[in-house]
Image 1 (cartoon, helix red, strand yellow):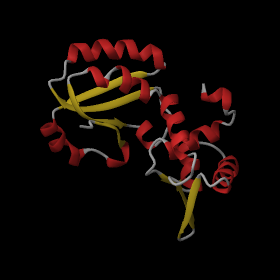
Image 2 (tube, helix red, strand yellow):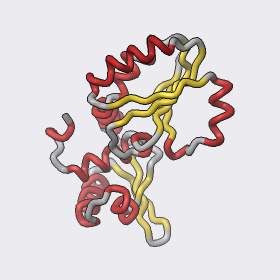
Image 3 (cartoon, helix red, strand yellow):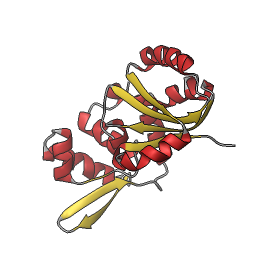
Image 4 (tube, one colour):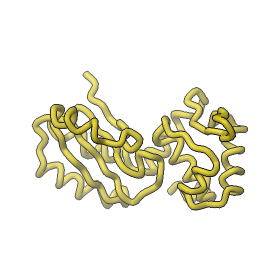
Length: 179
């Protein structure tokens, strides 16, 4: 869907990197290695995003570090489009809200780092989770979003125990229970 609207693969990669996980930062050479794209293509897109005010930049030694500008008027709209492109909104709407008593849901792996992937991996933290129902819902959601969904269900206590061993860079909270 997004590929039809935005023809630059580099632009899409940058949007995923900076607008899916808004704490993501990047610099030109690091992005070159991460994306396996030319520095020229990446530099052009970074400059366009910075000129539009969508990215903020600061210098760290000889590196220019980029990050999403959360104050930009279109920030929430772009983030919403990216989440829909990945399929996170559909998963949450179709699966999470019908599970039992979920408290938090985290995206883990490449997508949490802002890298496109055919796999959506989730950690679901909660109590009284109906695993048979979850498996059924995941089976229905996967064809709708054209991505494979993997999940790990943990109780709040299990998550507290495991959290120190998780790579925080690859952990993105995408849903939280509100009272």
